[in-house]
Amino acid sequence: MDDLIKILKELHPEVDFESCTTLIDDKILDSFDIVTVISEINEEFDVVIPAEEIVPENFNSAKALYALIKKIEDED
Amino acid sequence: MNMQQRNVMEYLDKTVKVCPDKVAFANEDPSNDLTFGELYKRSRSIGSLLSSEGYYNEPVVVFMKKHPNAISAFFGCVYGGCYYVPIDEEMPKFRTELIIQTLKPRIMICDEDTVEVAKEMNFEGRIVLYSDAIKADIDDIALQKIRNKQIDTDPIYIVFTSGSTGIPKGVVACHRSVIDYIENLSEVLEFNSETRFANQTPLYFDACLKELYPTLKFGATTVIVPKSLFMFPIKLVEFLNEHKINTVCWVVSALTMISSFKVFERIKPEYLTNIAFGSEVFPIKQLRLWREALPNARFTNLYGPTEATGMCCYYKVDREFELDESVPIGGPFRNTDILLLNGNNELCKEGEEGEICVRGTSLTLGYYNNFEKTNEVFVQNPLNKIYPELIYRTGDIGKRNERGELLFVSRKDYQIKHMGHRIELGEIEVNVNNLNGIKTCCCVYDKEKDKIKLFYVGDPEVSEVITTLKDKLPRYMIPNKAEKLDVLPYTPNGKIDRKKLSTM
Image 1 (tube, rainbow over the protein chains, first blue to last red):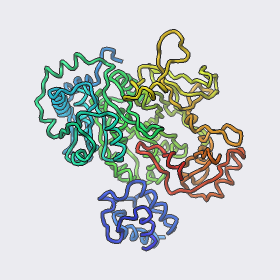
Image 2: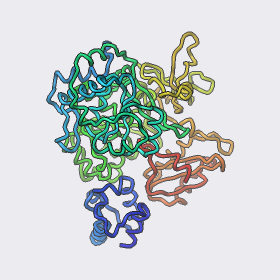
Image 3: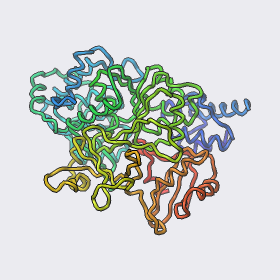
Image 4: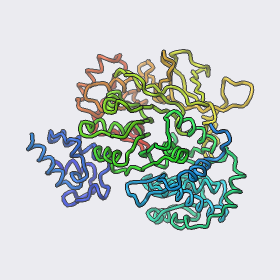
């Protein structure tokens, strides 16, 4: 989880990713951030996020995103 | 082309009689639908208000969020004989301030979301709320008087492009060049009353002309795609399907976002048959994915500078391309002429590279209150020694292939001299783009240090990229420095931000 927070913090140091659950709803992450995050996750966790998982629910909070990473890891 | 037409609003005047209850402009929320009847009424209310308050033939800033209402405000300005200047909450504040300084407008139309920001601006003029403006009484006689005295070279909008000096330049376009563009674009892309556009481009650039005016001309429909969907490729395609979108005129990066995440394996845009793209080179790998997914769709590459009203060249994709080829920009629309001029201001011979220059009605009027910059690029046709005739020098380098098709080679300013050789950075980019696992790339040139820098997005490591390139390019074209990025920076209109890269 810390590794993920670090990735997100690099994009937006001002955001409290531990508690924020409206990263998409409040337009904190934009389309370039999403592309960056997906690519960083791919490098850091060796996880490829498939297109069908690129949905707002999975990106609204660090927690949701981390759960997604775990889910994909478990499926492998 | 209808030679009688002098005013772009004649499109709406005619269409409203044919299909007043059809939806003209919409977004994701059906309660925001604007029918042609409602659009006509609101636009004419706004025009009447401007007229009754004494505004005429002057810039009216439209500062509203991206919404069907903003479009009706644009048309309201035109009915009022004024010209609209769209600005947007997405624009950086320093840019909007510079625009206001350049224009010194007397009036601005806002909505509830922008009015507070507008009040904070360094703006002295009147602020009118859209919701008030559309309540104004329609003055048919005043609007008819305006129509009668307007001529087709009167301006209808100003959009701002970045200037190399850092001060944005306001490109002023008139009825005549827009009508010429819409007529010829519509013929090439075969728009009709059944056309359903999904708008992607911001309303504050000329790119959205492709949807706005053909919608009026044909009684077609434009649905504004929520910006957030361009983060979520599957939802984006679902949106296109839900709204039965058959036509998109998007920047290349919006299209490749769908193809590069392998979305087509899950879902396809079922109704999409007409795909026009521009502003960037379409990577052949991605274009192939699109053509495989939609084998019956038409793909059209568009090219053109804002200064020549939207687009001026097109190429209908009619064959397969090798990975090391680029999609041609083809040839000019009807009633536009392209001159390829070499360094001696002579027409290029076959295969010779030269500056792409535009001749014809499509030329805009120039830059607002900036004769100096206007006169640098809107110049006398050097081939014509006998009467005044303007051409626009695009600063883009092109050449013709053996088929006679025009190819975009690079920007004039990306041509560099390095280690005594003339190099097109575009050529390096094409080679990098074709390496396995490369999504996109950009080369910039550091003149001071005489170094070529490569930035790319993709899987391979730097060492691998450089080693492979050595097999493809002469030694002097190998980048001196390469950096792998997660994403390339883009300008607001979707082009790779080369300025930002050159400072990295």
